[in-house]
Image 1 (tube, helix red, strand yellow):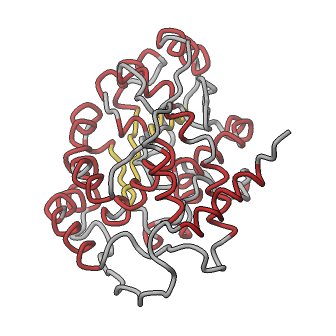
Image 2 (image 1 turned 120 degrees about the vertical axis):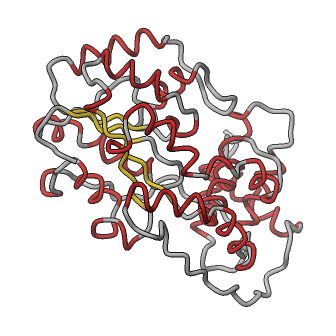
Length: 332
């Protein structure tokens, strides 16, 4: 990837690969990046990414997302005005991957001054057994999902078929303009998504600041089950996730106290079965975009020994969870 000519890095995710953390870094360094010649346009930035742009290009907002009133035409007008005369730009949202419209995206970027040959589509991809678990956690805690993890895996098998998902992007922007980065320590520059992405843009870390806090933290198994049961109530998605920040905080606070069950959602055998189902797809992506045989390190850890923590969301655990929520939201 050359960095001398006019170009746009379109970061499409994929989800659960540090996208929120990366977007937070890009947002907090917008001024510094602009001085270095890279624009991270403020086109309805929300949650640090260009999510509204991705949603509206796809045609509509998903049920779990909070919509805003501005139409796509307004966002495109702002994007075009902000990038006028600029040589380098970064657009980022994992929702481009979730709701792909590569041809429509290409047309809008071309209006903003970046035709397809100047656009490099960057996708970080994560090993499928790991991403299925992480996506289930996200779906329950933030999207109102009510199913079991096995149901979620069955429903989203195609979502993590990277060969299938990337092909339409390659068809519009060209295979040579698709950048694949496996989201695993040995493939990331200095084992960091920040350093890795900056390297893509030909930038060093000396002129930007990295966020000090983690983002998009998971919920442990028992607390996630509490949220899943809340999701069954006749509430809006926004109402269902009202306390998800508090539940994330409780997961962190109780991590060393053995109050809750946080055993793995999948056994080693189940993980292997998932990876086997994606073997051909992963091999194709590895050969096509990376020129190597394997996409991921597929070493799978053995199942941990069972702990003595009571299984299931028993009454005592419910008291802990409800007590935490009440303490965080005292009655006024």
